[in-house]
Amino acid sequence: MKLIKQITDLNKAINKENDLGFVPTMGSLHKGHEFLIKISHKLCKKTLVSIFVNPTQFNNKNDYKTYPRNLNKDLKILKRLKVDFVYLPSVNQIYRDKKLPKITLKKSQKILCAKSRKGHFEGVLDVLNRFVKLMSPKMMFMGEKDYQQFFLVRNYIQKKYATHVYSCRTIRKSSGVALSSRNSLLNKTDLKTSGLIANKLFKLKNLLYKKNKYEILSPKKLKNLIQKFKEQLVHKFDIKIEYLECRNSMTLNSSIKNKPFKLFVAYYLNNVRLIDNF
Ligand code: AMP
Image (cartoon, rainbow, N blue to C red; front, top):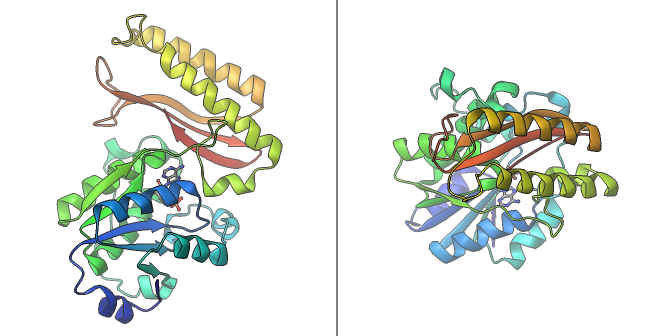
């Protein structure tokens, strides 16, 4: 496993790799990240994992400061998984090229997390654009756990580069809660609560279909049921829900009639912001 910190070393290490799988992460690795790495190992000859807590995607300074970091443990995991390259750049290395065009989202894209986390996805797209430009990977692996992120990144990167952006299913604990680096900010009780919330939302997703399982409820019934669940969740678990919405999986717009759709949620549990989709 080769540890790389400088761009010049990165170029030397990978310039002949034309079958490279790239797994971008912010570290504090868990089985969800491990799953992306395993898929990359299957589909690409070599795998590069980056660990970079990107300051420009945090719309809150304190969130950036308190984001869980655990480099030594991460490196042990990556070694065990036989990752070929680990890229650990500094903020200065990544942002030394200031000339790249500024990325802006269209009005129609300012939904779900983009609505509440101003500048977040612009920061994500900018940093991944910088990474892909440096590495030209054959494939890049992202989790469905952050579906809106995957959706925006795939559209942006695949338009610009030959890189294929591949989505991997969400890995969960047996309680139902999606694995997330932010789970380490929760105490035991809250972690259990987030499992209960995930189960309620799996149940809600099933209830959004008519009895025949193929058709979705009418928009009015759907809205009422979601509102009812929202109130129940807030009351039962003492959480603050930022959004709980259904969106078309292919377009992320809100027209879901007879189309594949996902139920998206963002909520605060004791000041920790968690997102998931079902
Ligand atoms: P992060 O380190 O949180 O930026 O995540 C790095 C990548 O891992 C992103 O593509 C995430 O969507 C993905 N990821 C995070 N949690 C999970 C999970 N529970 N299952 C699958 N992929 C995940």
